[in-house]
Length: 453
Image: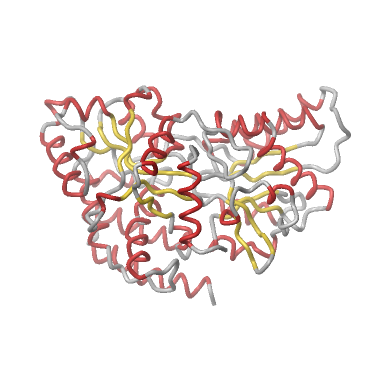
């Protein structure tokens, strides 16, 4: 894999050219179960298969999709491809937070996925023996930068298919009604001052809190145990000049604490309730104009678009680090396609052909840009119409430094779960911050050792 610096430059270059888009698991999406998705895909495939195909089907495709919010989009695109080519394409979508478990289960079946994904180098370590070498594929030839490929020696094991951005989405109308604009928020101290004021005047302003509920239910906790946790990791890596580590020091965990404290105190609900609060709750609070701020990404546009494009803004996640006035949004990818090398030669070729069609054809690139809201790192990519992406691009154009996605270096899902549990207990008052630090630092060392022998 290329260096972290090279990846950052490549991402920034793409954004400046007018690209940039959607993420992993949106809060408000209802993830289809594997059975539901299989049924939907089978129904689509059978109805479309009745239409005359232009070519004789050779091989088949089974895609285990990571993104619940794009399930129907992938079902529709699969049906379109089957209509055009006669090649059966099945899409199964794992439930939110259950991808790795579902993948392990599906890989043991006789009809295993021909196409799956990993979240970066750590995820790749578990599955590299199943990854077909993409170095000679047409798909690899369409990448805009080699930085978007993960490698094992000379072999290209996986390829990023979407570049995403997140931050703090806000309601411009409510912020203005409170007497502020984005120009008043240039760092953590400013953000806290504005949020504290809104929280104190919530009855007057007609809101329930400055921030939506920081739900720690499985549909929402990834926003904090992964996306928010990325900030202290990013700044530690930056300070130490590294791109990964076997032992995180926790240099910026005090900063992590103060942004978490702000989220749970200037909120729409009592912190003790966060364990049961869901992603749907946060979306409802934001769209219902009961909160001004909502941490999420460009992928959440379809959830919040009813507020109106002109009413949506996005702030960096400030945590009180020196120089953060020059910080931009968090940009990167944790979505890498892998082709299963244990599939038959016919199924491997069918899968490669399907992917090439997705990233080069008019129907494929339009679906990925317009329906899925993706910015894809391929030569034929189309600009997304997502207004949050336009905002993200402007930060780059203004010279702000994008925050790298470092959470692909998190040692395991168990580490994330440990941090999430400690955050929840701290918010509820049944645990202290030292437990969060222990889960973050000691948990990292433990899980890294387990993952790396």
